[in-house]
Image (cartoon, rainbow, N blue to C red; front, side, top):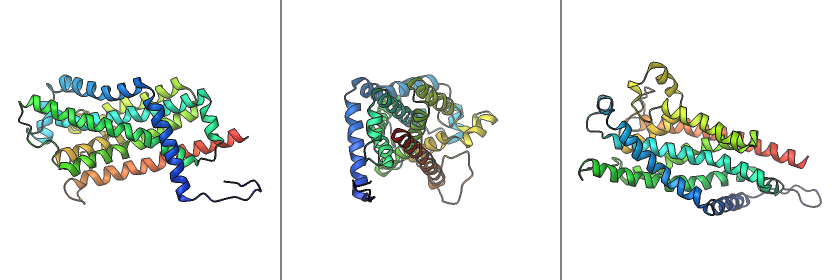
Length: 297
């Protein structure tokens, strides 16, 4: 940050935190002022969970029993997939909101402010995280209700890893969502068009969902789908959440035995997702810096 006499003044760590808070608060206020976004983001996961349970639940019993055992209910198996799917949809909305800022002229006003570009990205990503955490809690509660109805009130243990597991699920979902939030922001900064951003995000998220471990065990999928699932980030997000729900190692796309039990899934899955977060986050911040330079020019 430059002073009037041209001397460059270093921003403190506290200044960065304040920048993040300012951006976060602005996007939270903007989201809450749009009832359609709030309601649809909360209702959508409920609809998906109920529909997929009814559509797939009756035809996946044999495949699920062969992969994980007859004691695993498809509702329990599906809940992690819906958690990750909802995170994807919310993260995709981040780029759409950014384009809306561009069209209204607010984006240019923010660019000429002294707010750190890293804080701009992080604050916006955290605003999506708040919505994702609320969605995840709703899905977990609804999953329990559906399981209670399906089993006639004999649910037993729902999340095998207990309260720590629930907190872990929230953490995994947040880590997963950041890379796709960054991706949608990059698409928005490159295209500067709302329709192109929507198409770009949807073109990636929905095909990847169906070539992952989201809805069926990888072992029963065709060979080429198994190959794609091995490099598909959605597989690692879903399997990390599923490992916490079932309390066991469920990662079928990699043969990891070094960590023991559930950690054979969590360590490689989180390692890959954090790497994606750092890579795509850096790219998003780079595009924000480039946009700032263009604005100054």
